[in-house]
Length: 257
Length: 168
Image 1: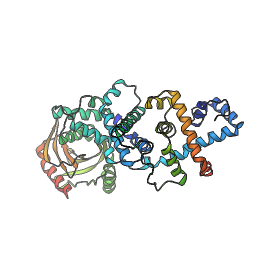
Image 2: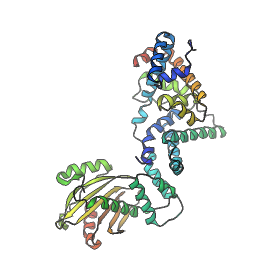
Image 3: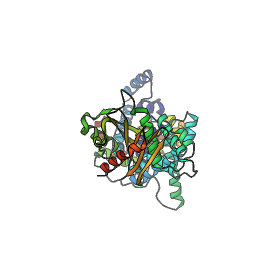
Image 4: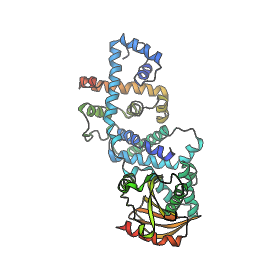
């Protein structure tokens, strides 16, 4: 097959662009002197290009939900057996989110968890990091509500509505989109005339389970959480939870529409 | 990027490789799902050692699953051999005739040659990484690569040679 003394290894390395500049120049010189070898190498290169092109449709196809790594990780967590106090598990989950490394979290053999507890941990964590930042609490301002809602809708893949809380004394400051292991979440930040802030946290949930509104307690933060039509909501503040109750009801009723 | 996100980023390429092995959308995605489930299960091990490169590791898992799947098909007496499985592929609308011929030619390669060619030419692995994924010596990778590339060339020889040239 090979009409010259050039080993196939070198020809492949040339085709696959693994030669350094000197080797490459030497190879070009020898190929120029051997038309048959040149054709062989040209054909290899052309074949590779056609092959890559022919298979590129697989890269453009949308990945089916059954292959979502986040969903598979969640399922794995849910089905593993050793029971552990739910707050510890949720804390580990949030820690993993915060560090961007799931290692410590997977390291513990995963346990069943409570989605509402998880939602509470996530929203509390987001609240602590952003809600009371004097200068950069929000990423998008409510000056253009339609645009803000459209952007969040696009990111979450579910329609995001911005509840009007003016009847209970809160105005929308703006919000941000956050990344979680289960995909994008949106956090809306509202402020009262007195400067008190509350957040509404929204995240599409992986599983179809619904959950009635229930109180959330995450250390110094309190609020309410519920799941409606596979979307999880949490309302949080660092004030008295009783004051939040009418707000939570208003939001729930508005978003149920 | 978190490890989970890094794995997620490899899913399209894993689907492409799996498809080239079985040429059946659902079977390929089943393989990839098994691969992801295994990967998640043994994530602590590779994260713990801090040296295993993620991408070759995922392809190794996928390769091993494909091999054991073929074995179990054979054990159950099914005649479906990898090299003859689903030789007729539903044409993708995007395919040009040379792309179509190439996919057919790839399908006719013996699996061991097809694997090497896919890993090197399409997935862009180093020769030594391909050797690791397939569990074979480097020299074997190189000789299979030669056979695969020459076999494709011979197949394309008869038809549309010119079309192939034009692509360059």
